[in-house]
Image (cartoon, rainbow, N blue to C red; front, side, top):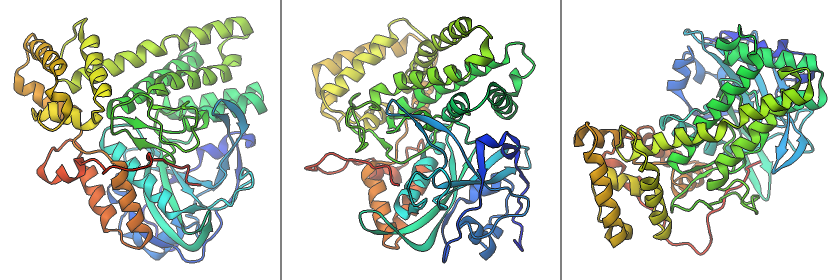
Length: 485
């Protein structure tokens, strides 16, 4: 590249054993054009956002140029997809390199939709514009909500069509992550590698994400325990905003604790634990209410991959792993309960808080109340909009809640501020996202830009956000999402 926007690259993953990746350049495209650039993210990574809009940088985002010092590769991994184990890998993504920021943070730079790899399993390795913009929108919304997530630096169109049910405009997304290490990466090592390779991967993970446990005698157990803690916290955050991932396969669970893969995800409107949006989740395995349990199931698969490192005796290793995994339900529940207390303006803990929260959720489910708007109305003390608020059972609940608030030392104003900070006014409503994508595919990006602006300040509770709080009109068909391959 003739103009360096500030790349300060390293390739630590490429120093792992060769079994974990295949060296590969992305496949060049005909005519890359920049659709959107995440300027704030680029700046935080130490990059010059003006230079990122240059012809050379756009060519890099399209896979046609490689930055100096990069060593592109496709990562190998495996995973349980809907409970069934498969050999997987980056079928349409190439890890370009790792950017080291001025604050010494390390970011994976990955091109998604950049062509076939040895792991493509018959796919074309490409992506359509709509799904790539969808990932951009949702991941930025998650970031603004304070939920750990991969992010998107840029989306470019390729000038080429991708063939799905119809011809669609092709696109490539530049995904940024703390790393792309997955539970499935460890499953790959455990199933197809040696104990030495599992150890190399675990040591690399500790170096990259959990340096605080490196000197411990039982560092691999500590690694397992720290990953469990991060996932318990992450999934509780999903539940607190009504986010449904849609495809919680083990290859879509990161070791860093970031949300990854925004194919069939969506946000719940009416509160219902059985809510499923993904067209391929016909049995509801990954329904909203199942996500905490699936998180534990996935972590058990991670623990299995670490067994050779936990103890040389298989039975003792299993016991160690089971003891670690047994902590997950309590860790998840304590995170969720703390988050729900904050959503109700509660600073301290009382034993009856759990029943207070569960009674509210039961009423919301019974009256088909919108999850986000119910907590928004409680936050703003605006109890006219929902049928739930006119019921005798809510009146009784509200009396108990007010009494509970009165038993804490903090003022009413402090409780209201806690609620404002904990209950988003806006989420990426499914119909709003679809409107933005439909317009973008037709060449009008203004709807998306306006939506992104609203989503960037979810806790502002400002008058100009009201239009993004409205629910979709009646529909004869339930909303469905798709993997977006």
